[in-house]
Image 1 (cartoon, rainbow, N blue to C red):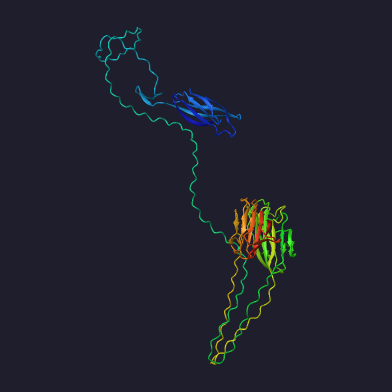
Image 2 (image 1 turned 45 degrees about the vertical axis):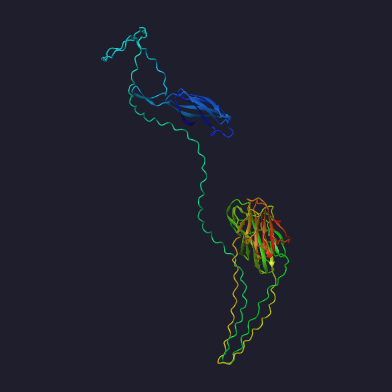
Length: 552
């Protein structure tokens, strides 16, 4: 039985109270009946009325005696057949103050007490009131019995004048401090305050560790031959020797350009493969989409082209059905067994990674291959019923035999014969060697991500990046590769597009230049489905080649 509160009531009051039952009633439970019992004293509890929402009730309490302390016990029945007992404690206090009565201090029961009895009538008399005699000594006998004779007739004398008012008595002593009243029930919890002011921004976190060093760029071309030195000053002695023959003319003719027949390979996975956790494993490609020249080795999973040139690489890794991640995951491309390119990283929220690059292969012994490293429990490569979830594409971009050696340059001009003198004039100094070309920039160690959840047009900084469409954005979007007239991307620029699982379809468009689908050569916009990845490579100033998985 729970105490639902403590109340204070004054003598003679009849007060209406309310008891809320919603804190203990279930959502679909209501009150059906309430009765009350007083545990002690003459107090009365009546007038019980259940609220309209059947979640509480009103009641009256009255007839308490001074200094009573009692409990009103409520028996509460519910629509579920439950019976619950609660009680409320009452204390009865005076409705007046303290007074002096017959020389004693006591509390009044009420501001207005009951009417006292009528005093006895005065005796009859015929004359005026005489002088009061001196008070005699107090008798020692017992008080006699009250006489039983009849009351005499009322005297006929007139009433004497009223005596003067007596002086005001002294002020009574102040009453003592009354006892502390009982503690009332706890009031309802106040409303939640408004949010506080946002605190200041935290300190900038420490700088992340330096990324892996990229591959060294190719050595720049040899500088041009320096100019022939000036002719020496005229001597004063015998004729000087004949001047040295000047160096040969311009360097060799550059390689002959020309159109290429399609050369390359496209392989992928046709189902799902289990691999070991935290172990570098060659990707088990079992699906050969095409191999134009038969240079793919299905046993070693290596591609060894027999034409020297620049080759474009595109690769994608998809991981599914793991039972827990312990770290990250990457796909790697190796050239002749050494790391050449690394994909973006994966985790529990991103289960696909891709990468691209351009590699120089010698056309005889150079080969490329792709492997994976995954830190997860029971990792699975690829997807059941989804071909090319993991893929590896290699395509020849440019090649050609070296052109013939250019013609020998003209002999330098023979220096003029100096006049006869004691000594021959000095030979002019050899011209300075031209400067060595700059070393190419260091390649990136991963593919930076640019997340977009709206229509988007690429910018120059997107070269070498992945544009990522998160699963939180389920709306179809259009991403546009800007024209060379607006953004002059260098030839060889790669832009990768990734559409996460559950995200809306992405339309890949191009502003004014040409975009061709690898293999088919068709032009126009391309559609990238969820879980798809595609890479576009700029092959000329106004033409791009695009290929990927989930791309139509």
